[in-house]
Image (cartoon, rainbow over all chains, first blue to last red; front, side):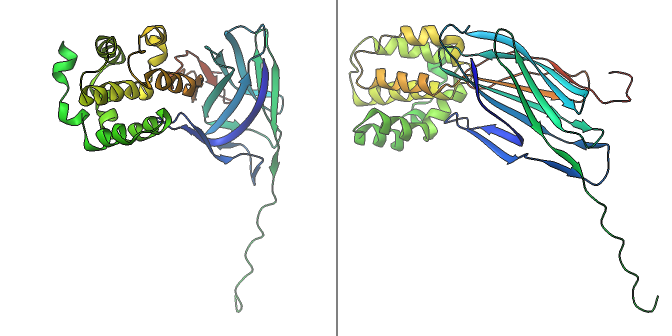
Length: 136
Length: 153
């Protein structure tokens, strides 16, 4: 079993009629002026590819880290049924970020791959205070 | 049969569905056209997956006697493509005898091939577990969002 790709987004949807997967607003980095900050919704999307000898169904865990602190965990099941691919979509609401440290989603599948996805989280400088109006 | 009594023929044999069957020159064309038609949504809404499969089983064992019978059969088949729990009935679907109906076998393959297994989980706030079945997979999962500083961690 291999992770074909994985990504983070603000939302994902599957068309009921075509079964096509769409992701909206990819998260490539997170910036905030202050911490802690709560991201209202983060969706982890992962496409796994089955290889010869792989089990049809495997269980695993998806852990979410902010720096070294674990901020979320989900039990996941990868079920290939009779297909070569399987989609794994996990929606976390919310994701707390306590410090400006990398956000990591780590997928551990029993007898399968361990995959980490890191998103940089940075603190931006606060906007400068507005200049006093002339005459003040 | 109860399921059949509940179906209104005028919502299945729509002009668009009849036109799609009449003009179809490939199974793919028929599939795409019927999927967008209200007749398929109607059947999928009114009948359970098991009821649809039972109706198909009853009708597919012989060559359709009229064009309308063929339209009904195609609509029933394509309605399965939008049923979320089809995977639970996959073996029954695969066991259907469809050799008497042109394109029915191809339609079945298209429906089955479209079902990419998907596991969807929603983990909300703290100590909340959730799971949802999407299209072809029914999967259970649980999880937790941990917020540092809270006692329920």
